[in-house]
Image 1: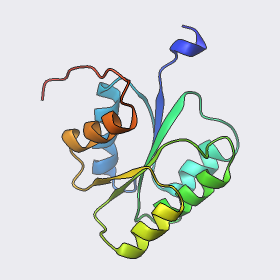
Image 2: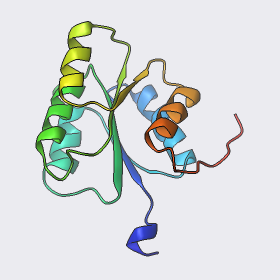
Image 3: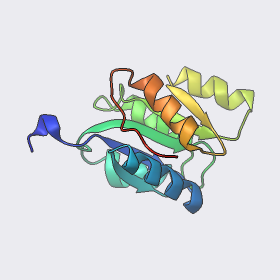
Length: 139
């Protein structure tokens, strides 16, 4: 398989194990490689800060997490030249205007509201990647 045919990768930062598992399962069914992180700190320090993530096409992150929240991760990503243009989606139950304003200022690409569902995830991916053909899934 050549580099141009390598699977696309999506990094997930989500502190809730059930939500992380649901997201990972959905993305794998949609033929993505998935990197799962328990919080923004793990995502940043173990994957993004040191090197590059092969085939990274998007980052999905919860807003409210311990150690480093989604806004902190988004800030780091936008300050790093090799990731500044990677689509970043916040997963949230939060409707706090301050978070929304901060996220917009950091060029967030969108939101997925909790509870995370197949329909919400696929709708956001189709919006972000209109040219991509997604596999048809039963469900």
